[in-house]
Amino acid sequence: MRVRVLLVVLAVFLLPGCSLLDSVSNSLNYVEEATTYINDASQFAEQLPGLAEQAVTDPQAREQLKTELENMRTQIANFNQLEAPAIAQDIHQKLVEYNEKLMTAIDGYMAKINNGVFDIQALKDSQILQTVEQITQILNQLQNLG
Image (cartoon, rainbow, N blue to C red; front, side, top):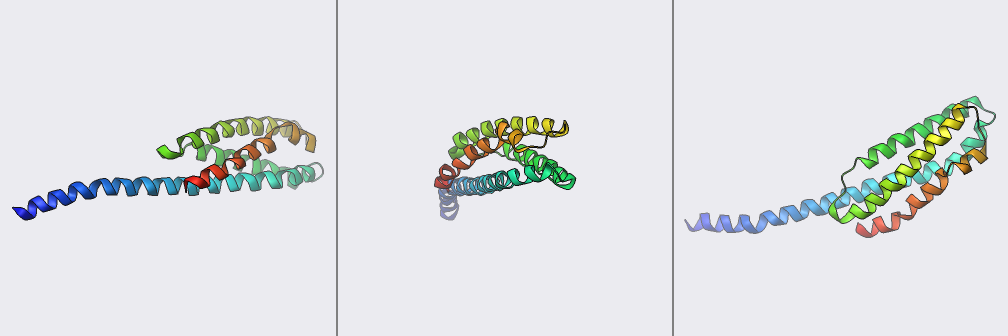
């Protein structure tokens, strides 16, 4: 009888601890996934101007540019579907808002590309680079959670 009572008492104290560990684990996983996404977006923005310049004269670069834009759209959609832990809800919401803005900018730039416009000014006008910069600025806030 005493053993059962002791086991019940231990279970009552240990089970909430498991929930806490799950919460910490979920938070760390989210921080890792979000950091990877932000780093990928930053790398995308770094290579985009050079690729856009090459696309003016090189058909292969045009195809690569389109592929990179489509890949970024996919990454945005996948990231937006992540379920953020409670501690990261505000940061995630900011990222989703920036992602929506980035998706709109990519769509607009893709429309120009599909209409044969391959110049660096079209990229600058698209707000893609500025929006990725805003996303990158969130990285410090995110790392403070980890």
